[in-house]
Length: 327
Ligand SMILES: Cc1cc2nc3c(=O)[nH]c(=O)nc-3n(C[C@H](O)[C@H](O)[C@H](O)COP(=O)(O)O)c2cc1C
Image (tube, rainbow, N blue to C red):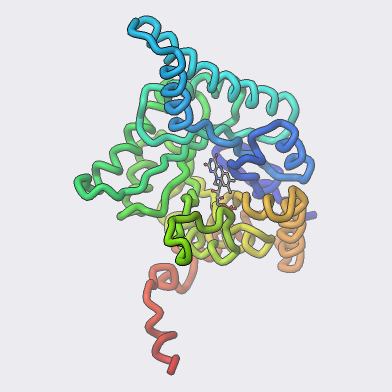
């Protein structure tokens, strides 16, 4: 018998295929569809710090007031209403589903509202994924200025928090191996999601205007998480989840061979519907049977940095060998 169960953040998942955080995980109806399709866990759509700040700004404009007490009230009210909708989604999902529900916070700073993490835990979330959205584009800020934000958020969110946390990382980090290692050494972070996929700008050369490149990923994009999951899972004992470019069973197999405990999929669900999750899971199972593996741990990490015979493959960044042969 093929056993697809895996452990992630101390949770037992029936299989490693997770519906990643997105609009499809923002309503109970759609989450139920994903659960029925067989996903091992679901990461809810994020509660966005920026959204709460924007709601606060517009409420302050609507209820213009000079009274500091009224200001405080509006501030509390705005935050509370956004958060309470989210808490309802968590508790409804927990009541309705028999798979782990991972809540998600999207932070840009270590602002005070991160204390809502405790309420998220109380609502029943099994774990918390924190997406720290940073683009280190300010020339006046050093690498350590940006890195400090991760530590500030982790310290703030985990203070008194009873559920495990995982950090959804940006690939725009100047020394990712060092950053991930130091975050793990705090003892407060159980895992890392590699990687968040940012909005991608493009330029329309006819109208000479800025546009957006594809919102959904392409399968070839797994090469970035593949490299980093393989490198980091071989160095750090944390639980790694791979995100970006997981469209089929082969991608799931590759990332697990690289060391991922779970793979998150989003774009493939938007493109093909929840049934694509079922297909990824069954293709993973078929591949295991064809290779006589009865459990995930028998092959997980086989080609990670620490295990593989050709470790340099993941550190290679030049195509010299290939270029040399091209005339
Ligand atoms: C429409 C859409 C909405 C998303 N919303 C969120 C979100 O709320 N929080 C988050 O952390 N990531 C969000 N993401 C990013 C995905 O979780 C995922 O990291 C990214 O799409 C890469 O995975 P994929 O290649 O499987 O699509 C969103 C992605 C899409 C396409």
